[in-house]
Length: 250
Image 1 (cartoon, rainbow, N blue to C red):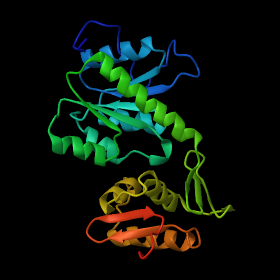
Image 2 (image 1 turned 60 degrees about the horizontal axis):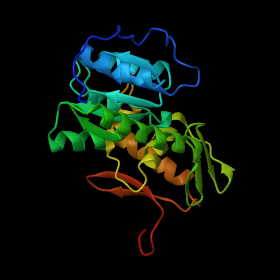
Image 3 (image 1 turned 45 degrees about the vertical axis):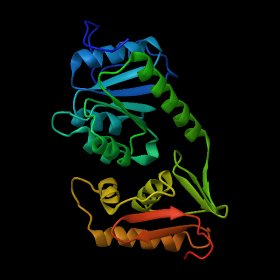
């Protein structure tokens, strides 16, 4: 069955109570400005016992993400104001919120951009309900595994959810921004993280970080990770990558 507009119960806004959701339900944030489509997705998710919150814009989505934790987010790209790509760029990697993009944008470059910004999967509208459910179930399975496994790379161990880190079993002291940089690099270990992505993660409304500031945080992390057997490589013109050093590579 293909999901399309239909009459359904009223949409629950982001600041409304969760209603009949069970306390231990997995929490899903639906970010969609097309109300009939959002209502259809909410009806499906409610029927499976998920705790659902709805945001109609990028601004509402960011407010909901700041106020609470979600296991997954179903995200439209073509939102009014702050679009879905911008929402992705402001996600806190430490929160482990899996992202399923559901968008009418079907060009390859748009899909690649969404995935590069941190989305876990991309589904083009209109979609078959069974595929939507299956993709979301797969994301949630991976998310739950990630929540229960400590990330380890050589002598570095990190509890991303608990925001704790160890080097060779010794606690590692990090500032909030150093932690944000390390979390982003680790969640994409073996992949390049650009300076733009790091800036978007660290930038607040009051301060925009320069390239030099990013380099300072990378340098500090390298010093603190000395002896851990990991390497933060600089790929000039591209960004940074955290990995275990390979033989013959500095």
